[in-house]
Image (cartoon, rainbow, N blue to C red):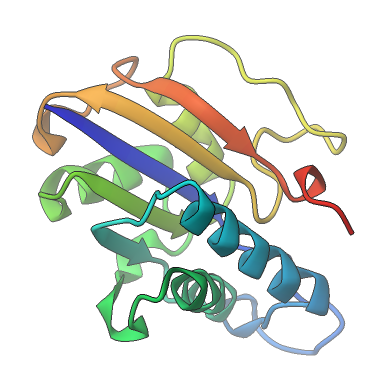
Length: 169
Protein backbone atom coordinates (compact mmCIF):
# COMPACT_ATOMS: atom_id res chain seq x y z
CA UNK A 1 0.00 0.00 0.00
CA UNK A 2 1.24 3.49 -0.86
CA UNK A 3 1.52 5.95 2.03
CA UNK A 4 2.15 9.68 1.94
CA UNK A 5 4.25 11.75 4.29
CA UNK A 6 3.93 15.52 4.26
CA UNK A 7 6.85 17.20 6.00
CA UNK A 8 6.12 20.82 6.89
CA UNK A 9 8.64 23.05 8.56
CA UNK A 10 6.94 25.56 10.85
CA UNK A 11 6.31 28.99 9.33
CA UNK A 12 8.49 32.05 10.00
CA UNK A 13 8.69 32.91 13.69
CA UNK A 14 9.01 36.32 15.28
CA UNK A 15 12.50 36.88 16.66
CA UNK A 16 11.68 40.46 17.71
CA UNK A 17 9.84 39.30 20.82
CA UNK A 18 11.80 38.56 23.97
CA UNK A 19 10.76 34.95 24.55
CA UNK A 20 12.37 31.57 24.92
CA UNK A 21 12.69 29.49 21.76
CA UNK A 22 9.73 27.22 22.57
CA UNK A 23 7.33 30.17 23.04
CA UNK A 24 8.20 32.22 19.95
CA UNK A 25 5.05 33.11 17.95
CA UNK A 26 4.65 33.33 14.20
CA UNK A 27 5.56 36.49 12.39
CA UNK A 28 2.89 38.07 10.15
CA UNK A 29 4.72 36.64 7.13
CA UNK A 30 4.65 33.22 8.80
CA UNK A 31 0.93 33.37 9.47
CA UNK A 32 0.33 34.22 5.81
CA UNK A 33 2.64 31.41 4.59
CA UNK A 34 0.98 28.80 6.82
CA UNK A 35 -2.40 29.82 5.42
CA UNK A 36 -1.04 29.54 1.86
CA UNK A 37 0.33 26.05 2.50
CA UNK A 38 -3.03 24.98 3.95
CA UNK A 39 -4.85 26.40 0.95
CA UNK A 40 -2.43 24.62 -1.43
CA UNK A 41 -2.99 21.30 0.38
CA UNK A 42 -6.75 21.83 0.08
CA UNK A 43 -6.52 22.64 -3.65
CA UNK A 44 -4.39 19.53 -4.25
CA UNK A 45 -6.83 17.34 -2.26
CA UNK A 46 -4.03 16.39 0.14
CA UNK A 47 -5.97 16.37 3.39
CA UNK A 48 -3.97 14.43 5.97
CA UNK A 49 -5.53 11.62 7.99
CA UNK A 50 -3.10 12.26 10.85
CA UNK A 51 -1.46 15.54 11.90
CA UNK A 52 1.57 15.37 14.19
CA UNK A 53 3.00 18.65 15.45
CA UNK A 54 5.75 19.82 17.69
CA UNK A 55 4.16 21.56 20.69
CA UNK A 56 6.34 24.67 20.19
CA UNK A 57 4.11 27.72 19.73
CA UNK A 58 5.29 28.45 16.17
CA UNK A 59 4.78 24.84 15.03
CA UNK A 60 1.37 24.47 16.65
CA UNK A 61 0.24 27.84 15.22
CA UNK A 62 1.37 26.64 11.78
CA UNK A 63 -0.63 23.42 12.22
CA UNK A 64 -3.72 25.35 13.33
CA UNK A 65 -3.62 27.67 10.30
CA UNK A 66 -3.19 24.71 7.95
CA UNK A 67 -6.13 22.92 9.61
CA UNK A 68 -8.34 25.97 9.20
CA UNK A 69 -7.72 25.98 5.44
CA UNK A 70 -8.43 22.25 5.27
CA UNK A 71 -11.61 22.52 7.38
CA UNK A 72 -10.12 20.18 9.98
CA UNK A 73 -10.89 20.70 13.65
CA UNK A 74 -7.77 21.84 15.51
CA UNK A 75 -8.46 19.22 18.18
CA UNK A 76 -7.29 16.57 15.71
CA UNK A 77 -3.70 17.87 15.91
CA UNK A 78 -1.54 15.50 17.91
CA UNK A 79 1.11 17.47 19.78
CA UNK A 80 4.06 15.26 20.55
CA UNK A 81 6.80 16.70 22.78
CA UNK A 82 9.34 14.37 21.15
CA UNK A 83 9.04 16.43 17.96
CA UNK A 84 10.48 19.62 19.50
CA UNK A 85 14.18 19.83 18.59
CA UNK A 86 14.07 16.20 17.38
CA UNK A 87 16.79 14.78 15.18
CA UNK A 88 15.97 12.75 12.06
CA UNK A 89 16.16 9.39 13.86
CA UNK A 90 13.73 10.51 16.56
CA UNK A 91 11.30 11.81 13.91
CA UNK A 92 11.56 8.51 12.07
CA UNK A 93 10.84 6.54 15.24
CA UNK A 94 7.83 8.73 16.09
CA UNK A 95 6.42 8.15 12.61
CA UNK A 96 6.97 4.39 12.83
CA UNK A 97 5.16 3.99 16.14
CA UNK A 98 2.53 6.75 15.89
CA UNK A 99 1.12 6.37 12.41
CA UNK A 100 -1.36 3.95 10.94
CA UNK A 101 -3.17 6.06 8.34
CA UNK A 102 -2.58 6.68 4.65
CA UNK A 103 -1.47 10.33 4.73
CA UNK A 104 0.43 11.96 7.61
CA UNK A 105 1.36 15.62 8.02
CA UNK A 106 4.37 16.14 10.30
CA UNK A 107 5.05 19.73 11.41
CA UNK A 108 8.41 20.34 13.00
CA UNK A 109 11.76 22.05 13.00
CA UNK A 110 15.12 22.11 11.27
CA UNK A 111 17.65 20.64 11.18
CA UNK A 112 15.79 17.43 12.10
CA UNK A 113 13.03 17.76 9.51
CA UNK A 114 15.42 18.57 6.68
CA UNK A 115 17.73 15.71 7.69
CA UNK A 116 14.75 13.34 7.75
CA UNK A 117 13.80 14.38 4.22
CA UNK A 118 17.34 13.80 2.95
CA UNK A 119 17.53 10.44 4.78
CA UNK A 120 14.25 9.14 3.30
CA UNK A 121 14.98 9.94 -0.34
CA UNK A 122 17.86 8.76 -2.50
CA UNK A 123 18.45 11.85 -4.62
CA UNK A 124 19.46 15.41 -3.83
CA UNK A 125 17.05 18.29 -3.40
CA UNK A 126 17.64 21.71 -4.94
CA UNK A 127 18.40 24.27 -2.26
CA UNK A 128 16.42 27.45 -1.71
CA UNK A 129 17.94 30.92 -1.97
CA UNK A 130 19.02 30.73 1.69
CA UNK A 131 20.75 27.38 1.14
CA UNK A 132 18.18 25.16 2.85
CA UNK A 133 16.09 22.30 1.49
CA UNK A 134 13.28 23.24 3.86
CA UNK A 135 13.17 26.95 4.64
CA UNK A 136 10.36 28.03 6.96
CA UNK A 137 6.88 27.03 5.73
CA UNK A 138 8.29 24.64 3.13
CA UNK A 139 6.35 21.44 2.48
CA UNK A 140 7.76 18.19 1.10
CA UNK A 141 5.36 15.54 -0.17
CA UNK A 142 6.79 12.02 -0.12
CA UNK A 143 5.36 8.62 -0.97
CA UNK A 144 6.55 5.16 0.01
CA UNK A 145 5.35 1.57 -0.23
CA UNK A 146 4.65 -0.54 2.83
CA UNK A 147 3.58 0.14 6.38
CA UNK A 148 4.79 2.98 8.59
CA UNK A 149 6.86 0.51 10.58
CA UNK A 150 8.76 -0.15 7.34
CA UNK A 151 9.72 3.51 6.82
CA UNK A 152 13.48 3.34 6.35
CA UNK A 153 16.24 5.47 4.82
CA UNK A 154 16.03 5.62 1.06
CA UNK A 155 12.52 4.13 0.81
CA UNK A 156 10.61 7.28 -0.18
CA UNK A 157 10.11 9.29 -3.33
CA UNK A 158 9.89 13.08 -3.28
CA UNK A 159 6.74 14.01 -5.19
CA UNK A 160 6.60 17.77 -4.59
CA UNK A 161 8.54 20.42 -2.72
CA UNK A 162 6.64 23.65 -2.13
CA UNK A 163 8.36 26.69 -0.67
CA UNK A 164 6.81 30.01 0.41
CA UNK A 165 8.39 31.78 -2.56
CA UNK A 166 6.24 29.53 -4.81
CA UNK A 167 3.23 31.67 -3.94
CA UNK A 168 2.54 35.16 -5.32
CA UNK A 169 2.61 38.14 -2.95
